[in-house]
Image (cartoon, rainbow, N blue to C red; front, side, top):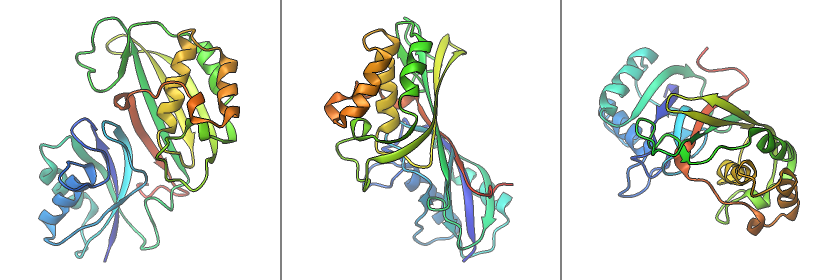
Length: 255
């Protein structure tokens, strides 16, 4: 059966997350239903990472196995037709070798988190950013973020329901950037690692927001990390500012 890599973009608001769940809408379920319209049978797809309810994607990568030998462009066009009106789009498609796997072949995941800093409620950006009514100190947040770079036991920043075998992870980048956004000043968090623990990025951002607001010092972030205690973590920020931005492979399947 020919295997295809799919680059997927979606808004997370209408979904219970990526993973298919009984009687709940999911991104995986929407794509598998569209595949069943093209080849009527049960389809099971795999993705590079499972995003939670409300989390978005700019560059999620998934795989599907088809019975027919589809032209990749025609497959993406047909899927996009049957995905309407769900806010999910196949933005690239490529045929790959049977040994390629969307999750296990990946060598890096990249996330983006957006904070909008303004007092007025978000309108055009509602559900796409975490809106806060204060100005954050970006330099202080970066000083706190720098203490998280490298290989650490991230128990403090790991959800209590995380199923990962170990809290040891290597964080390659946590960059805090001030941006002039469409609706006002934003802070963007750019996060890179091979893999992440459950709620790790949202735990980072919620903690660093406390630093930016002046409630924590940058050194408090390092102390929280060293505590290896979930109770030492700052607040976990909401999901709607988080995007799975990209997935990197030794060789991109999309050319």
